[in-house]
View 1 (cartoon, helix red, strand yellow):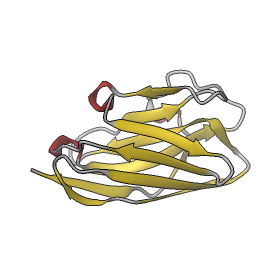
View 2: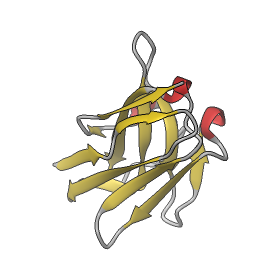
View 3: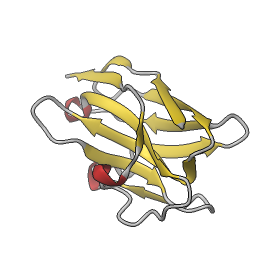
Length: 127
């Protein structure tokens, strides 16, 4: 089994920055298909940023391109999401998620294809 634990959320003003972290443990999750998702009140969960290959290739939602950066430190088994130029529409619960080890990363921004989820960390951006 795998366990994912997010941290780093908080409240910031528009234009501010936050860095989320996700500590991963266990042997059954895929480091080659791991990423960040978010869910705002009354909205469906959506993909934000995912690392989808062993070479560290990344994909981002259009709404965060140029503002958010996903990265991974395999020596620490930690995933990061650097969020800059935050806007009120970025307010959501942010989740770290990974697919089962050995599975492919087809359609990496689709939440339903991810097996392991953290408990989430809240990000609130005020105008």
